[in-house]
Length: 116
Image (cartoon, rainbow, N blue to C red; front, top):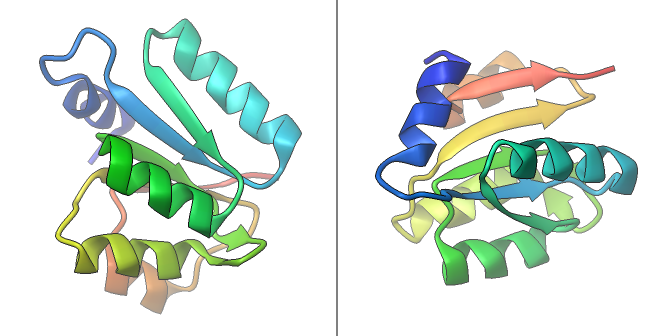
């Protein structure tokens, strides 16, 4: 699935589709949030797995930008928890760590991006 399709899917029929940025690096999170808001997304943010899980259950975002290394767990654990709850938002893995092939195969994120 390409990035344009993910954004179109996230938009759906909403005027300001809800997106969640899960990133513990504040500077990077701020850049991502600012860019998404400039593109008219309703953006929420979390810096931990627990905070993200709470927002996902409460707000039901259509798209999640997800870091893998979080202070209280991993993005993979978070994906497992939300899928066990029957939730299936589009997910973009955005991590400085190159995800292992078996993790990508297990969770089949919609997109992955390794940042420097």
